[in-house]
Structure formats: C-alpha cells, structure tokens
Image (tube, rainbow over all chains, first blue to last red; front, side):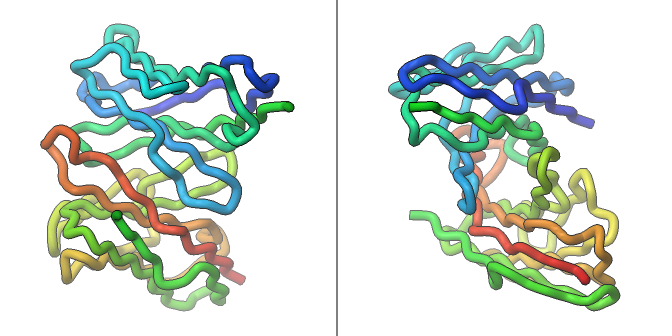
Amino acid sequence: GENVEQHPSTLSVQEGDSAVIKCTYSDSASNYFPWYKQELGKRPQLIIDIRSNVGEKKDQRIAVTLNKTAKHFSLHITETQPEDSAVYFCAASTHGQNFVFGPGTRLSVLP
Amino acid sequence: DVKVTQSSRYLVKRTGEKVFLECVQDMDHENMFWYRQDPGLGLRLIYFSYDVKMKEKGDIPEGYSVSREKKERFSLILESASTNQTSMYLCASSLGSYRVYQETQYFGPGTRLLVL
C-alpha cells in the first residue's frame, strides 16, 4: 500500500523567512496530494492541493511542487508570519479515495 | 459552507464497552471517512465509505466497524473498547471521487476518546 514520509518533523523559522516541508510517497497510482494545516485544538483545514497532471501550484504565500518521477512533493511558505505556526500534514490519494497522511511537521514562526 | 459535525467532543468509556461515534455532513457528499490521530503518527484511515451501505477498509480497521445507512451519516463503532483505542477520532467528507476538484476533504471537530 501507499506510504507517505514527511520531513522535517519540527521546523522553526524567523518571521519573514521561508519554510519548506517535504513529502515522499511510494504508490505511483497516487494522483491527488493535499496539504492540511492544523492549529492547536482545531480540525485540519486544507490549505492547498495539487494533482498529478500539474507540476506546481501557487496561492499567495503558499506554493506546492510535485515531482512525479521522484515521487515527492513539497510545501513552500514565503514571508512567514506568526499565524502560520501550526502542524502541517501532507497526504496522498488515488482518485480521492484511500488517503494516506504523513506524520506531520510542527512549524514555529518566531517573532 | 460545508459543515461536518461529530456527536461528541469528549468521551470517556470503560474497557469492553461498545462505543458509537457519529458523524453527520450537510452537503450531500458521497464520500465519508474515519481517521484516528495520534501524536507523531499523523492521521490514519480506519474506514471510508463512497456510498450508502458501501465501505472500504483503510490502514487500521482492526477493532472497528462502520455503518452508513443514510448518505449524510457515517458511524464508527468500537465493538469492545480497549485502552489502545484511546485517541482523537476525526471524521471527514468529500464531494466524490474519480472526479477532478471533488476530492477535497472537510473535517469534523474531532472526538477525543479516553478508554479506561
């Protein structure tokens, strides 16, 4: 079955710097890759997603890149702000069914 | 605005009890999911359902069963609760699958279950 690894497990950056979180997956059939942000005590919220027919997607300060050949995808957050502090999860899915999540990255943005 | 609700935010049960966790979505979504979330392990899929009365096992179905009698409601059942089932349980729903732009999952607020 699918296996998703995520690195780093924790990440601290200074406010205004960029943050990058990387994920790898094992199943070449996976074609949908969402990223979720979970603040303390709250439910996960989708922040961006990418499908296998696209190499990069951007939404304001957030971007995701996908390398299908290498089976890895990355989340890039630019100009980080304290409110970006949260746990971020990547996931892989085939046609929106069996989702497999990474273990999460705790991002701390230091003022 | 999609709303996914779960029957309880906190639940305390005893070992051996039968436990029901209920999830309801109000957006006519086809897919519904049950996850458990544990520190350092992320979210692990227990079961998902892509239609009424249809279910598929996820990565960790042992010790759990599910029921989907109506499209808007997806129940997770712990037949005989054990202490290793103490966890945060999250329900999610999505519009559908095999169709682009319908895979987005919306999560409920979670149920924190403690089994003593």
